[in-house]
Image (tube, rainbow, N blue to C red; front, side, top):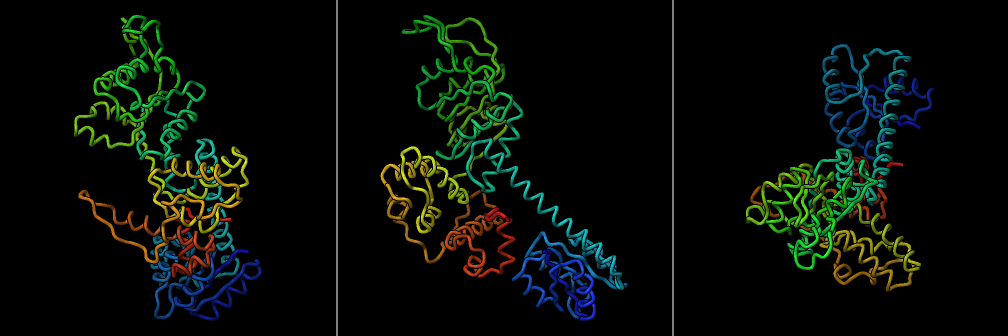
Length: 461
């Protein structure tokens, strides 16, 4: 049942509107001024507000701003007298849905309310479909999570996947899932059924890496007893993933640059160029800009690789994903090792959510695997966690200290990240009970619901 709040300082107007709209089965609330209107808005979530612009000595425009602070998506229909039409137009510019002039007809009120609520319903359906689309995209990309940070990465993956020749540079800390992102780009692209060949540029010395990438002819060097096809030829039509590109030798970087520009390779010891059709995806956990300054990485190669950059944020910056990742790995390894472990206790989840995860998703995965090997219980408790996790004492007071880097920072982003983290912690402590979370944070429930939607912390039913 749709909830409608009627705000008017004239009792006759409120009662008249309640009489008209009650015939359509709405749940109606009345308020004679800003203070009771705000009080009730903090306790209830309204689908529509009918707001008189002239509330005695108070301004309806000021109340409109405050209602939008509680719920930015709220629909407001302005009720205005003859002399305040210009003010009503100003309210429309501020985001009000529409306005209606006094004296009004019952049929006109009922129609405009019906249209407004239909719009509200459509907006909710669009948000629901968007979440469903995002979930489907995450499944297609084989990624686990629901955070806005991860969704941003997946949208970038979807965008670049269709441009099958665009070179991609994936950056991020070790263990964040850069290889998973590379595979998702390949799998979602027209090259998805062709080979995906990966190699770690830091795991082989220069001579072996050169041979692995480009291949060699028989007799090209000592022990080259047979012709060898390189990875670029092997991946023809598909994708080559060069992990830890920042570790590649400078002399080999020159050859890679030539491959990216000419789309040709030459085997070691060979005398002819071979055309290739591959997409190159590179990844690194180091700062290539710093490596360029230190003359350890070619600037021209960086720009050739950095056609489409994707940054994979560390796990500590997308803590919303931790519960889903835990469920995913717990299901996987409990089944693999035939263990009864099925869930994580509230205390353990709190510790895991506050841990800084220097090893990122890889560290989380390894921890769950280790627990599944060592324990036969049904629930993960704090006692099962590694010392570095379980040894963390819950802080009684949050540390708000922050050092401003030389290049400066975005204050708004820092404040939003802190706010999001604190709300996420509060949800964990209250088992996602909205009312308890609001009390814990000393927030109005309406304000909290707005922030939950803003940060994608709690899905609507």
